Length: 237
Image (tube, rainbow, N blue to C red; front, side, top):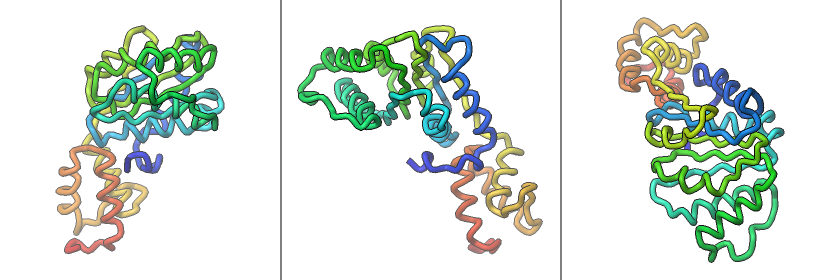
């Protein structure tokens, strides 16, 4: 959950990716059809942070009146997943959850969700997906109303992203670790609060070791540099 709270300015290029995803979400040549965008990459690259920046952006919230954020556990039942979707849509709309939802079977839950979303323009984020079967379950419950509904998926697994790409309009964004130069610049800016990304000479060897251990993962760099920035440059600390 910590990745949800990473400040936008701390991740290089996140604004560019955010704006690209928002542009895909609310316009473009494929605006009318329901489309899926998958953010794929190893843990610590900022997939959840990026999705959250899109989901909470005023342009996005204004465009999609019906929205749901679903954090997907590694082990789940399809029925529980659909129940969570129904509840989340209605929570954001401040509506009451339908009576009897806990006793509905998979087909009735799917039918209920399809009917609820009929003719609506909606957006759903499925965060941290591990199972390739997820899309097979949820796509039947998410109608293509031909009015620009959008689904965003974050995952560490390339086969999950591939399983969600069924049309040319569906997108897959592969997030990569930072290069050594990008990692060094981010670390120095955060740790030493230097806008140019410079490191004090006496700390260079120490800083180099720390950056290598972060293996280019921006969330790891942000976390450790945030801690080190409070140590006042004392290597022994």
